[in-house]
Image 1 (spheres, one colour):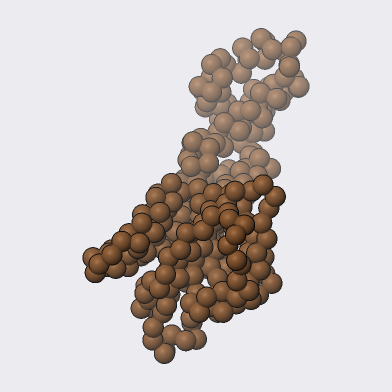
Image 2 (tube, rainbow, N blue to C red):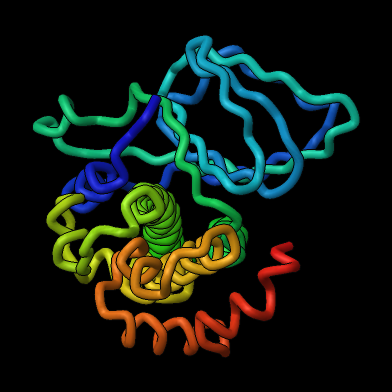
Length: 275
């Protein structure tokens, strides 16, 4: 089941909840396996290895880099992998408030792809250790730490989604540039073309390629110009126009900046050795 991380954050921001139990499990053939989940919903935090759970016949692979939520009193099946050592921590919780019944997660199962987060692993292990201490201070720390664990989990998921979205946007715009490098592009025109903020485009290009969109376009135009120089007898003026730069003098300056020599010198040096 897919779940929106922002809706999940909104849910826990407005829903009173309390930790009901924290348990650490490791591969142990002597431990009996339950046929149904507990009376409370819970989050499973894999620490090592790999094991498969099925909540109401929906399979989830538990392994580091993801967190799985299981609902209360769900039909449960578990499959272990041959010679796979696994370990996970289960946190059961209870929500309160009759008005929240319609939005409760107690009957839902889903997966949260967090990626490998040393901080999250550190927090969840600390949570388990604090829970197993005694006294009122331990109970208070448990509640606070569980909120920290949820916060880190949601942040990790949101970060991965942003990264994935950034990669997809970069691929779309860079492909468009490759196909239309000879047109008169600006950051503003690209932003309008793809319906995003111009600051967003600049951020995405610097994150994905290390340079801004204008520099990316300039570099790609020079790469195309290099190919034309070595495969045709076109004049510098015509080549400049062919790659979308209508001022031949400006084209030569940009070319020299990127390549280290003028277009004419580049052609003279490599015309007999294009590869």
